[in-house]
Length: 356
Ligand SMILES: [Zn+2]
Ligand SMILES: [Zn+2]
Image 1 (tube, rainbow, N blue to C red):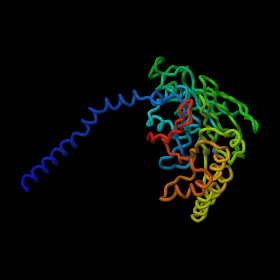
Image 2 (image 1 turned 60 degrees about the vertical axis):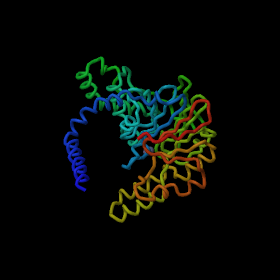
Image 3 (image 1 turned 60 degrees about the horizontal axis):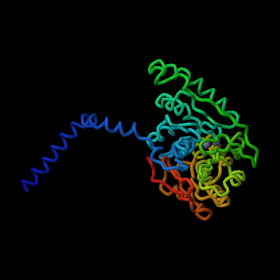
Image 4 (image 1 turned 120 degrees about the horizontal axis):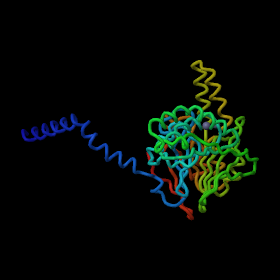
């Protein structure tokens, strides 16, 4: 018994010693950890194919595990984003991607939650990424105004960083963004906004009325295809252009849950908040409607994103998805870090383990 007590005491003393040295130990481990982080590049680990990852799976409301809308697309060795919601770039870093590799951002529309991370994306992509040309921001007409505003807002920051780090690290030619604008496609029409190295990106109109322009993007690469909806009601145009594609990444909002939040806001005397909870229902698709689109377009897989409202209570995922299984069963409820790979010239749809 005495021997046992001595062993326990020794372990406690040793543990206390290590605990008191934890700062020094962290300092010794830090270089190795930083090396691993700085040398990591997720793109190099992905095989040839079309890869979709959620850097933000939520909407405008704060939600655990679901940041502002942000979808990463990797193909032909390049990284693109569809929208740049808050926290998306930071999630991308934690998922092993390098900001300097972002080749372009496709904006679906100009609601604040879809663009509020854009300044950070362009700045870190430049300052930490050795880029000597501005970041291309693709979008429907109006994108030039958004880009001009961000460039103005970040105009002083780019001078600070250039003064501090010099022309080799932070050349002024690489700061900010350049708008690449396209007219809003008519219903039934696709406009090709990017085509290079086998990757084609097409823009199509969606229904986010009264918000216009609002568009979706269809990505095609080496026999694989994915369509990212942006914000939309149930859309016949999406159903038409999603026919037979591998992956539909579709937004959704649960109306029953928003109605409950509307009642709660009314009950606590917040009529303006109650009105917003009611207003938003009419320009988003429900999970059931997104599932119907996936079913009727015969897509390979449905990935839900822009999930509204936040799913914070036990059972809320089941409530949000109520009725979906009866319409379409090949789906994933997205979270930050959810990713799906579509290997080139294959029919495989691989839901990867979460990167976060
Ligand atoms: Zn939105
Ligand atoms: Zn919107």
